[in-house]
Amino acid sequence: MASDRLGARDLVDLVLDAGSWSSWDVPPERDLEGGEVSEEYAAELVAAAERSGVDESVITGEGLMRGRRVAVVLGEFRFLAGSIGRASADRIVAAVERSTAEGLPLLAAPVSGGTRMQEGTPAFVQMVRISEAVAAHKHAGLPYLVYLRHPTTGGVMASWGSLGQVTVAEPGALVGFLGPRVYEALYGRPFPPGVQTAENLYAHGIIDAVVAPEQIADILDRALTILLAPRHGIPVTPEPPEPDPASLADVDAWDCVTSSRRPDRPGVRRLLKYAAADVVPLNGTGQGEADPGLLIGLARFGRAPCVFLGQDRRGQTVDHPMGPEALREARRGMRLASELGLPLVTVIDTPGAALSPDAENGGLAGEIARCLSDLVTLDAPTLCLMLGEGNGGGALALLPADRVIAAQHAWLSPLPPEGASAIVHRDTDHAPQMARAQHVRALDLYRRGIVDRIVTERPDAADEAEAFCQRVGLVLEHELSSLLARGPGTPGERARRYA
Image (cartoon, rainbow, N blue to C red; front, side):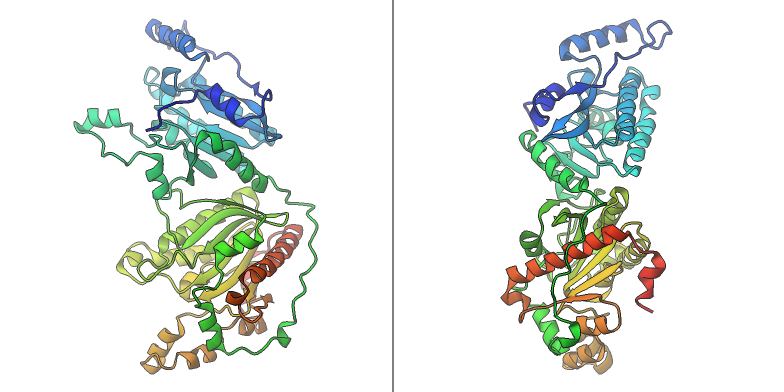
């Protein structure tokens, strides 16, 4: 577990620019005469203030972080174990509402044992008010970023600790719902070790990273650089010079399929490395699932920000094909794009979704349907890149978009050509023939109006990985800046291209 616990003011000094902190706090109001605060509890409050140097379990205010104005809510564990009572809840809600009114990004750093037991149910129900205030802040399109500290449990973890658009945690931090002491008292046995740790939450896709306090300013600054990038007034970049698709070499469909399967073909990781200006990786669904077959993150191409969802060819293997968890991760990205008003970029590059009992039990078909529905109706600009293989419903789930671009050798098919051959010819020998007959190529899809633009491969992306990725990046930058200028399309417009 984390040992050298930082106080709230220590974290202010560590994360914010020197001398920039300004408190928003006013002295807490307590009903000392109405019987709500007993003499014993009043004495505890006085002792807690003397011990911690603060007057409540949270402090709030604003400051500059790398020159950027931000609002901050921080827990203080030395004040009654960071517990949340009515006065501290009032303070949190006031700070969240003020940051929303002033259009500020909000940084939260909870540390708490949960609801203040001395106040009981009236304190417990404050989770509702706090959650509503955070939801309104996010609904206003403003960033809400969370740093979970050691320990964060109970009602704090179950409200403002779990609502971040980006959530990271302190190394070794105890993070969970029911504190281990309570569990042991209730059930007569210790809580299983290694579960309520930051590292375990990361492994299960609940948080995005485990970050030391000294690195917090760096990751928050990178995230806010993308999240606060202008949505309006970005100049539309010049259209990259690309040959007219009608003049492209008529590469055989089967050659496209085999090219897309080359192990040295660049995937989403090399695309981001060579083409993106900024990248902040995210992790999992935030709800206990993660799949290495999907890369989710925040990114910028040139000056254009986006939420990025890419099927990762490196993370998909025969033993671990892309499962329904990956599509639930994708839907998290769609929600983020909607909340933040950011364009969404999806990248198709998959040999196909998992065909297994686990995938069926995990609701794979339903997740494909929900991805299609969410994408078609998303209230943010959308851009799809067909980068390589595009096999089956797992590929189709990321296709609907305002604009669709494709690498020259990318393809899309309801089944791999071998599978189609098995159905039609009862063998796999006719796979090349089926690829040709099913019009799977990017060029075929361009001619049908499904693809808007083709990025050439010279002669194959695997032979010119860096140059190819940079060309794709210029196209993404142009398309994103154009989409930001005109806004999202309607569901009808998005569906019409397939008519």
